[in-house]
Image 1 (spheres, rainbow, N blue to C red):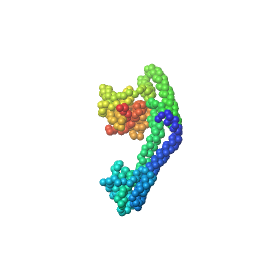
Image 2 (image 1 turned 90 degrees about the vertical axis):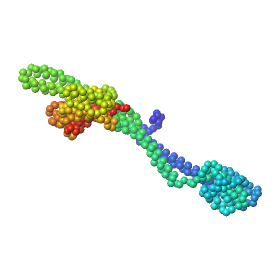
Image 3 (image 1 turned 180 degrees about the vertical axis):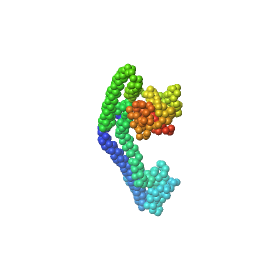
Image 4 (image 1 turned 180 degrees about the horizontal axis):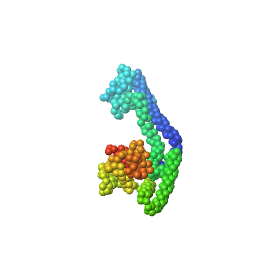
Length: 443
């Protein structure tokens, strides 16, 4: 849209809707006026045709009662001047071969009104069919002849045909115009709604363009400010928690050194286990904070190649991990982050089961990566909450591992960063099926 058009458009949605309705009504009025003009022009042409036929009929009757001589020439000359296009004249030219009296209704009408003793002949001189110019000759009872040139039209169109044409035009063209105009108005609303729906604190988002109607510009400006405030809040929180985590490492290290001076072995080993657990918890929290908000640019990568590499690494450690899927499937992402997410899912599968089965499929322009295990699984009512930080599963999945509830949270965060999602389902083997859905790379 040009700058001039933007300047002329009303700034508010209400004004643009009023303008749209006005344009639609104006188009309808112009169409109606155009159709009325065409109908009036056709009516005038047919009225002129009837007048010409009446003039020719009157001339033939008047000449039939007028003696031959100069009087007839005077009558024909006077009547010809009243309608020059008729080209009325006395003639002794031979009769045309084509007699159209029975072929065209106006000639039937003319022949019927002339009565007995008159003969009517016609020959097309311009075009074919009834809607053309006809060379007409009337032979009087005394065998003298008068000729004229008539532009005759075909039968008038039925009124219902014109009404149907108008209705079809209004039903097809006008809705198309309205749809085009309203889609322009609603495009900004859809863009705004999509930006609000796709927003996530885990990913990068370009500022929403502040254009369109005034209401949309105000809303877009408010959304941009809100996202900036949320990003600042998340960054401050991350920085604070990261600092706390780093600060906790020093006292944990000091406590670990002091445990060496405890003489009782059981007490010393118990404290070491608690400190190891605390250290693992701090490292997991720092990893979650660090991985949850990376801002490296994504790149195109072949997901099956990455999966084959990961499976080979686990196989080298003696783990039962297998892959099934295509040899090539491109996505956009950060290789390090996706590798960490997939390895987390495989680690979980091997912690709670004896094997991990990885499959990759393409569905609706998305790559669906599934990691299935044969462990105890997760109840359906707990699967959504398990993706939140520090939420642990039931005793069946946690008593032997002592996890801190951050593994699936990190995977979910990485998936959202890549405009994807993590879903948890029951696997066919009775365990858990963790599925990452990622959009395919643009072609």
